Image 1 (cartoon, rainbow, N blue to C red):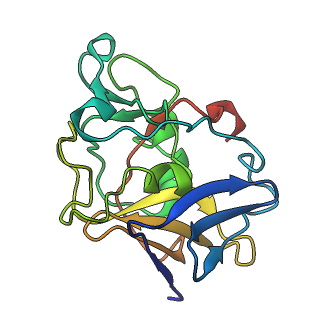
Image 2 (image 1 turned 90 degrees about the vertical axis):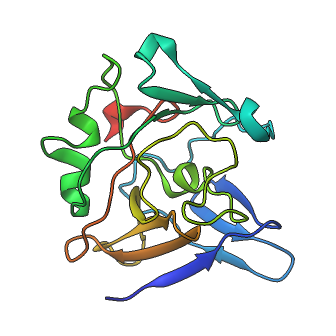
Length: 192
């Protein structure tokens, strides 16, 4: 398995760029991974103009029977308790139990998050899991979760986020089985 690792730290920022995705950018170096040419998420901008810390960042959604959480910083809605067993990348995207077929809090329209979206949940100061203090999530494994982002140079490789230590890494889509954390909002799920 060929892996590339990026450690998210306090001074790292994330941004989507047209024609490519910057995973980490600081004064010393930038790690870039352009999405695959057929990736429907290329060029879609997020409206992440807020920085919210502590318990005010997340809202447990009563309209979703408290089974979903709104990230007030990004506007995305996440499963409150990701419950999928580890699976390969294709299974995570399309098969029974996948995000595309999931109903959470009585709502459809879930999808696998992009690498930027999923890594936006990481708080590299915290470990095991690497989530912000005061988060309302339960059942999050301090382990690896798939993203929808493929490596543009290697179509058999996809990016994933490790919630034990906050690392963003890429690996083989078929040989690896990782956890899945579904998201709603932002990108159009019909573009999958």
